[in-house]
Length: 163
Image (cartoon, helix red, strand yellow):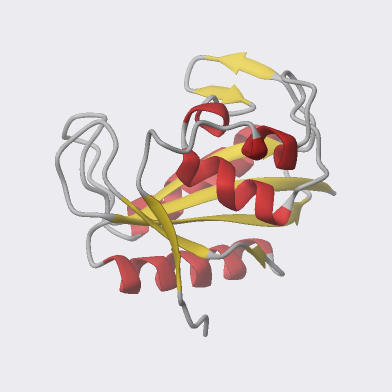
C-alpha cells in the first residue's frame, strides 16, 4: 500500500460535486483523510469561485491505474474535456503525490507542479501532511506553506459539513 494525495476542485454546482467526488473516492479507495474545504478564485481564467481541498488515502494500485481511476471518476461526474485547459469544472481530481515517487511522463508528472505554485493546493496539503517532505524541494509542506507568497491568490477556509 502506498499513500497518495489528491486535489479536488469544483466550481460548477460545487457543493454537490465536492460531496459526490468525496463519495466516489471513498467507494473506490476506502478510508479517506480530508483537509478543510477552501474557497478560491478561478486561476488562469474568468469563472466562478472554486471549492478546493486535498484528500489522502492508501492504494494498492500502481500509479497509472490510480491516475486512470481519478479520470474515470471525473468523467462519471460530468467532466468536460473539450474546452480550454483552464476552464470551469464539475469535478477536477489531480494526483498530487504517489508516496515519494518522482515521475515525468507525458500526461503524468509527480509531484504535481501545482503544489508549489497554487495556494489552493499547498495550503490544504500542508494541513493534512505538514511534516511530509516534498521529494524535489526538500522541505516539508508546512515549511513550504510558511514561505509561500500568500498575496497572489484569494483563498479562505470555509465552514463545510461533511456527510
